[in-house]
Image (tube, rainbow, N blue to C red; front, side, top):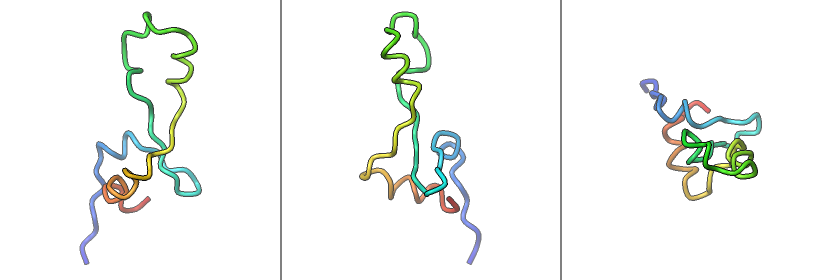
Length: 65
């Protein structure tokens, strides 16, 4: 069986915790931050767990997680 390739675009965006959870960053936090409030900016810094509907699909892109 050949080795599977990790999807590098996904690997740069998704972090795997020690217990195997998939964590993602938040959208809308790349630029134009001057117009967003401090509370909103703080919440955008936090990582979120990947939604259950996306776990299987994203998991296939990260075969050796």
